[in-house]
Length: 268
Image (cartoon, rainbow, N blue to C red; front, side, top):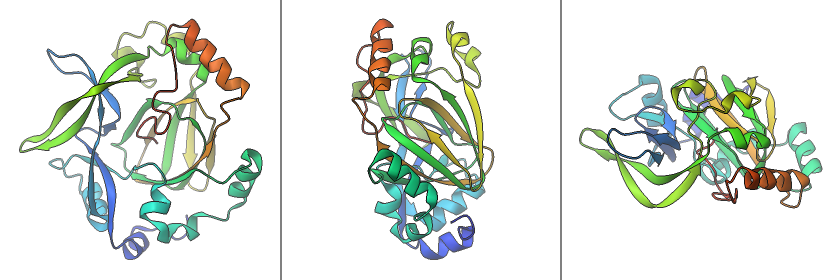
């Protein structure tokens, strides 16, 4: 894939529409603070647009439409762009992962975004093999036991909607446990315990694959237009790691950590 997936090639084979997430500032699935109101956890606006229009919009940096990020989860590569599957499968890394986890990937996802798109700190209930096809991804990784110091709180859920002036926040009824602190700038909010965390900073370049273990928290950015493919493998909920994670949550008074198991975060 890293030899073939130029903009021209992708535009020629992806003739239809794809699901694109839009935000006013590049922060998808993130806590948003509003003057005079409680902070809320806001999900991006998802729209179906032609792939060629998405690319043009991303390079044009059209502020009126917001920041586009091709980041739909739940098996987006196989479901929305199956023509790319042959290019992205059959590697030794894929065979290795299936041997280790004893199963095929639950989902294969395609990610395309630029330096404006940021995935806030989140965890996944999947073992994650993340491969960069073009560009550079920057991860901040934090072990599951750091949950005690990450200031996780309950936030009312909301999502972005389009208005004549741009974007508005439309609140929903459910509540989501989320982490507001940004490991790249922890001083921006009150996070007195973050100094006890053990962040690991990783740069993943073209042709490289990063293994993000299940339950590891991660914040993800890119320094330029970046294309990546990740594979999610089901985690073992009987593993010692999961029980240790739940124990740490209980001791920290955070309760059940399984909320949002299927899709915890906009992703990477």
